[in-house]
Image 1 (cartoon, rainbow over the protein chains, first blue to last red):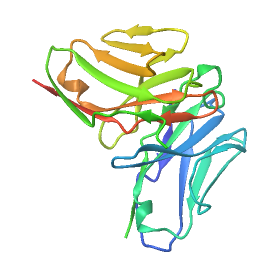
Image 2: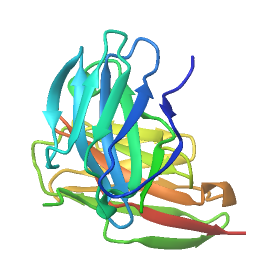
Image 3: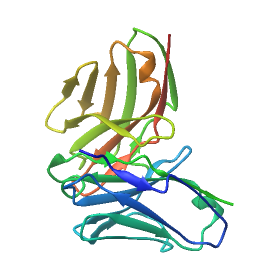
Length: 116
Length: 110
């Protein structure tokens, strides 16, 4: 079974631009969560989508948004990029909604975003 | 507010010895705990998990211990191997969301 895939793997943008990242979950998984990883900050939860609906949202500004399609693929968008948005963006999928029935999340390789 | 904390940013261990990675949490509603391993340029890989109704779970060289009264979680790796060198994240779930620690970088010295 193929794992979680994320595209692109690397991205360089300039301040003020916007960016869209894509995540394809493991086949059959209906939940997709997005995390931001920066040095020393661990994984910060952005949001989770389950069955095309946003189930949870972390403490990030409205510039960060996402959506999920009927095939469970998800996209994350960041508008008006700032230097501080430079990070590794990780996507994780699970069969059911995060944490329910003690279901595990499985991560993709991440998208490394550099904002200049 | 960091609800899951890994207070040791790094740890070095000799090959063949035991590695002990620690994690503390503050939320008593957490009922499921996990450990992930992460190599550079890769996403975190699931290692082992434990439910709050247990105090120990083993999988080969990896054992996770849970002390609910102390709100403390630890991962034991025995024996440690050079390929275990990676960043280890602990995570906890309240049934609604996962919360991650900041990670501990483990170096296993040959």
